[in-house]
Image (cartoon, rainbow, N blue to C red):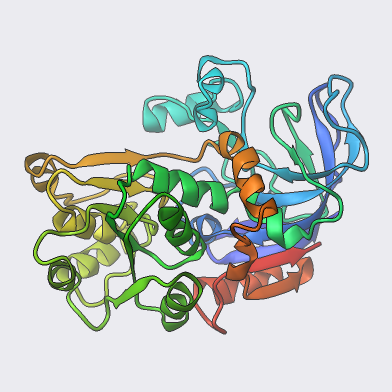
Length: 390
């Protein structure tokens, strides 16, 4: 089969690789009909995620048709149309029973590697390094899905892929991030990062009762999408001081809830801390660029909440933790418990409350994926979200 493979920083290639096979009774094989390039994939593309190996298949936003079923699977059959959550979960451990699927104790076969880096191992993830399981991703023609009696979510055959594809990751991620904000009716929510998760997070914050949502970014097409599609207020950090402007917009109070939908590769314009971050990561003196997290801490109102769906992989430097402690801030974060949210969010799609496909700007063949990574990474061609069609 054809698959998009990682060969080093900035080097992804479509290669011919062996087809996946059933390895366990709880496996299924899915023929991929749609897959997407996620902002998290760029962290791998840009060399920030450790334990990647040459030839690793990328992709964790996947859906398609079941073509082979393991002997232990009774909930799926050949021909079913399914969306595959990016989190791999056993469904039986302590964390899965609490619906904390991204913390599954069982699904990461390389748990010891993760434990050494993080203290404990989270769940295995598709296409996201050997520290998190070494599982092949779905930017390919076929995908092996372990624990398929827990993961894939069956959808009607007649519904368009584009409407439901993002149930695999970014729609549940945006919703959980908004939920983690602990929004109260009428709250002002500031969201840093107008990428796909940030765009959907605006809608999710509004669903949960936010009175105002402020999108912070510098990319014109991202700000325009947030404003026109979701009626968010917008703030271009390349033109104004973010802290000062947020204080003006909230009469000195600060946003009630802040969301870092950027993560480790934050752009900071010409700010001093942003320049230092870039130098440190370029020279491997640091792994992450936490400019947005610093800004959110300083901007959030006293007693507010900071939600972090943006991915961090290692050590973040110069965090104003004294400000966070003295302001009484609450932090909530984590990889998404996708399986928990898929049924509820599918209902919202089916009932017409939201169509997540509004974020799609590009559709490409799998062969064009390297070009897709380039324009997404470099924010060219008004690119916000790419769907690949193997």
